[in-house]
Image (cartoon, rainbow, N blue to C red; front, side, top):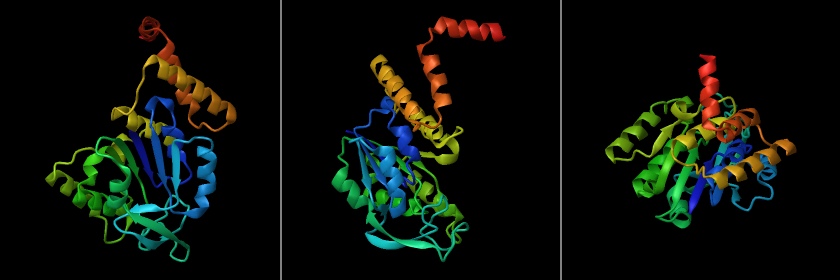
Length: 248
């Protein structure tokens, strides 16, 4: 099966990108421990049986833990995070990442994972590396939010060094692959470059229908960029070459 793991789903900005038919994910798991964000997630994923919303986060153990500044982009497990308010928190549930992988991800699955999760990303990656479950992942995109946590600033470098030692190279760093004006375009930029898309003609037709439907419903951010992609894909190559030649 082809799986997408959205670890730190927040309000569903990434879901809007990975529901695009060109990726043909069989299942999409959205991990979000902050309760008040699930109303928005349910709105984004409504009617799509591929999406499973999980009201917990991944970590290196099963636990209940405070998230400081819950629901904000700065939300963190760590009170020493530079952008959180220590008196604003929510007690949230977390499950052991390796145990979850063993129960839900088969050896032959094709797995793409976005990891941006309250500073827990380093702990999760080390847990998966030590259990070897990480080798089930085709590509994981990592946003090391832990670098903003006092006394843990070097934790990301430590994890990358461990990757090198154990010959794990199936990862992308946020700052190197997330380009675009919206979260949707940034996520798709990354996925397109790690061979996640399937762009046969039938898929392109499905994609065009999906984009059009979402735009009409007002649920599709970034559609100006997407319309340009459609025009490029369905315009014969000789017309594109002619237009470029005239601009020169």
